[in-house]
Image 1 (cartoon, helix red, strand yellow):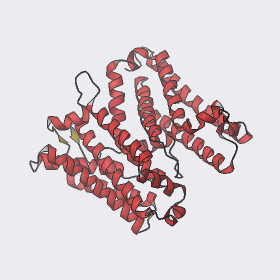
Image 2 (image 1 turned 120 degrees about the vertical axis):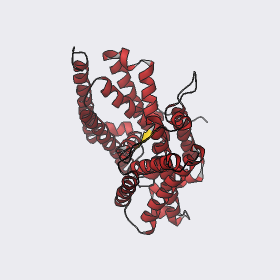
Image 3 (image 1 turned 60 degrees about the vertical axis):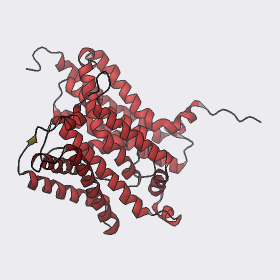
Image 4 (image 1 turned 60 degrees about the horizontal axis):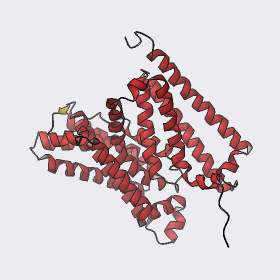
Length: 370
């Protein structure tokens, strides 16, 4: 007896998290191919996009686990800056080898992640408040240590981590970032830690009743997030060949946006490492497109906010559809509520297209870049 083949819409539904950002990536490619193909698709610009995306990949990988467990980490920017400054001091002031200073910086980041996890699980401080407070603490320590100094000029090994390239191959940071995403994918889909992460996010009480050490696994996720942020701090220091206390101010928002755009639910229980990878790439491509079109930084923030709002709204509706049992995503889109969601998403996409079109108009106006 043979079972009937599933309809195409039903087969596509499990992959909607990755399809969404990939469609937006394709839209950006088509738009930029129409208005600025020479500048956007040149090899040097593609290299810039990859280097920018690689910087956020380790943090997006770790943040996927944190958010899947119904957590959040707003301190990753400060962890990156403080870890980078500590590494710089070890190299510049105390003569440590870069091969020793880099692992110490990553371990320091893991320690800060451990502190975050213990504050949340042992003191029962909400994730949002706890990590926001520790963001201030870590940034304060960075300011005290640096005293306004910009530490610069590091050994070649460190600059290779941040912007080096294997001749005839991809940049070294891209290899590092991609390796962390592959490791995160294996950890999420092939290990008990990944399965426990999804179980905890779906229902923490039920997970605890089944014998899962919920608090311990939450701490592990924050340790991983701290170590990944420190690695990003090392990569940032190498990329700029400099570090200061105010570095990485918007890492947290960028990374959370990439993870949410990639389909990981802010309400826990739904995760997509491939989606997080696509989300990082999407945001880097979008910001680069806005820069290519000579749109001011403030409008870049507006565009990022539009993407975040529309993504959160879509995935929140999808999760509500799952709970209500609307007969699948595509069936749910045919309901009145689904039609409202489609119109809302179309309006937001229209705002983005209008913003890009205005930028393209000014980019092609002689003397606009003055």
